[in-house]
Image: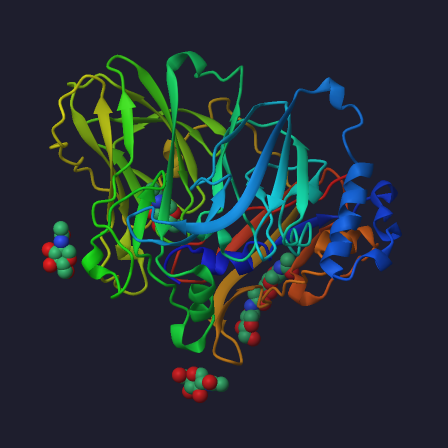
Length: 480
Ligand SMILES: *[C@@H]1O[C@H](CO)[C@@H](O)[C@H](O)[C@H]1NC(C)=O
Ligand SMILES: *[C@@H]1O[C@H](CO)[C@@H](O)[C@H](O)[C@H]1NC(C)=O
Ligand SMILES: *[C@@H]1O[C@H](CO)[C@@H](O)[C@H](O)[C@H]1NC(C)=O
Ligand SMILES: *[C@@H]1O[C@H](CO)[C@@H](O)[C@H](O)[C@H]1NC(C)=O
Ligand SMILES: *[C@@H]1O[C@H](CO)[C@@H](O)[C@H](O)[C@H]1NC(C)=O
């Protein structure tokens, strides 16, 4: 419980759900499908879903530019760091290919689930205003997409910046079911201050499958301590010392590092996405300062740093000038193992990639790391990050205070709690369906906070009683 981790996020983040009860326009076209043609309840709900979604399609979609992606999800053997194991693949790739559109586009993501288990795709950071049913959170906004079924997400994107898509089912994303989601803004104030864009995906990496890790974490023996990662990846690559791997593993110690090629004189916008489950990284490129210009979709005034802490699910854009001698340099993503609950053994916390100038010689980088101190296990100081366009904080109508802690339940399994209530997923009857069915009062273990008035400004106060940091994200606001 010392740092932030999916092992808990799975349970608490989706556990905090703010509902704005819809007016009659959203009530119940869900209940009219023919249940006899389906044996599986999920499939039935899934079909109802589609009927509902079609009903709510964008009637005026010819006003918008539509951008479609087909995503085929499979599982197969792969060795991102030389250690071979089964991973999730998106269109055969690890991590998944980028999804890109412009601000104002309607984005369509057609998902084919070729797994033997259900899945979902959540577009992390996208507000889903008017389309909460496409948020991709099982138990909240939909049932899982059943095995060997298709599902389409379709929503208007009225924001810009660096996002990512990932499975929100169990811990599938920690095994590769993820990719970048980039929304370009033709009016981005920095558009003319860089020449090219480069996406950098940071990941922590486990050699054990997430079902096993999750089961271990949710046992009394773990005492609430998260499993330590075995490695970290940059754009799906790193090497690993195979003498640490269990006997009989298929492992190659010479797996290649990720390479980023720069042209001298050009300016690059690096979009850095931390898709980690547990480890926080400190990102840097030797000898190259980073000018922060975007934090999770918010364009900021330029702020120069040498070492950038990136917490789970955070995204930053930085501008880097390729104006140093034409050589190779280390890109570093240092896992803050000091924030781990238990000391990690057999882990090299320094994840590297190579930044090389076009035309440089073939010598390995000999660059040295920036020496600036960064405080352990905390974020960049928010005071240093100023929105590009100053914004006024609106007047608050209502405050919602929630206390977060972790404690053992009656079976000694450590769980996360919101105001002393631990969330129980109701996969067969997601919260949003209940809303459509007219439910106005939720069980305590649904952690649902109801907002009755449209347009109300809510101040959410999070009180963290745990020793570790915990990032929160607003999963979904239903509005009509
Ligand atoms: C790999 O790990 C073994 C055992 O800890 C160690 O002896 C060896 O030096 C390591 N190899 C490298 C290249 O770091
Ligand atoms: C990514 O997030 C994890 C979890 O908080 C964090 O430990 C890690 O340092 C972050 N990585 C980077 C590059 O900031
Ligand atoms: C959570 O508990 C606190 C303290 O008892 C209380 O003030 C607050 O209203 C509760 N929050 C909600 C959303 O019920
Ligand atoms: C839970 O753990 C405590 C402390 O280790 C122990 O005393 C107790 O018997 C355990 N309870 C159960 C139900 O396992
Ligand atoms: C949670 O329960 C504990 C023990 O009953 C109590 O002391 C505490 O005030 C409760 N917290 C909230 C936020 O309700």
